[in-house]
Image 1 (cartoon, rainbow, N blue to C red):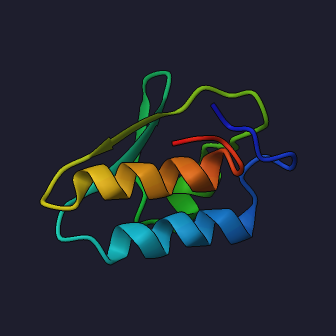
Image 2 (image 1 turned 30 degrees about the vertical axis):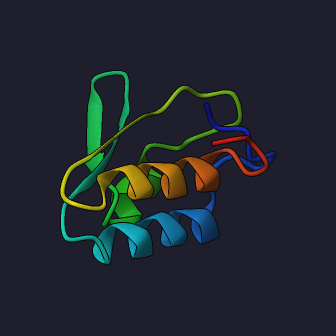
Length: 81
């Protein structure tokens, strides 16, 4: 769930992309039937994530669990992981 008060604007979208680009695997975000590669700032911004929206995170590779935790912290700052 997106809990960032301003939704997902440029700065957190860039943080997600930087996280995804540094992974040995992939990080994806899904909203409804739309799935995007988190490594693309533009694709993430195109989801127009607003507070209260439900986002499904998916990752693969050896750092998948840590990537999911980090991505969740960007989407929902202050939430317990």
